[in-house]
Image 1 (cartoon, rainbow, N blue to C red):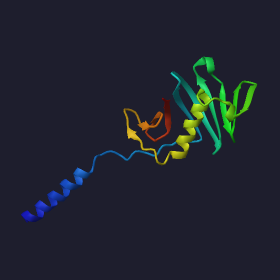
Image 2 (image 1 turned 30 degrees about the horizontal axis):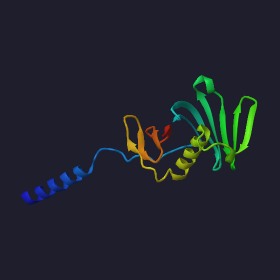
Image 3 (image 1 turned 90 degrees about the horizontal axis):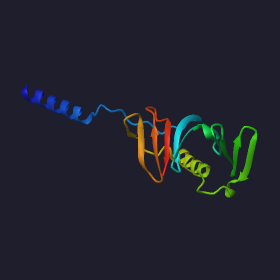
Image 4 (image 1 turned 180 degrees about the horizontal axis):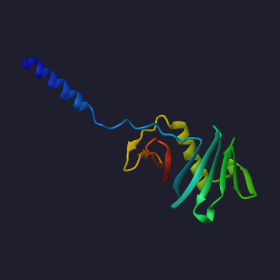
Length: 151
């Protein structure tokens, strides 16, 4: 009887030791229409990211007030910048790689392409990954992108 109780105790101890009480981190979720904060070039922006298809995406700035309503579009190797009825279209090769729109689009494309391989780690609120080359990300508790910090 004592041997059975000892074995049962050992099994329960090992089972409890393997349980951390934490849920597995969710997969990074970019969604098709997400509101997030982007830090790039020493400035913070609030924006809405819209993904129409694999190669068509729009970034609409919602703050600060000075840039509210400006939309950066990327589609099939072309870029657009629009504000109200004013639209500027160009080949993506004409947009400097160091420009804020080009950098944001480049990192968003990377996140979309690699989202299944990107590991998320628990943060104060939601999840994060500070180990990605050139950027840090934050998500909500469901893995939805909430913040992109471009270094």
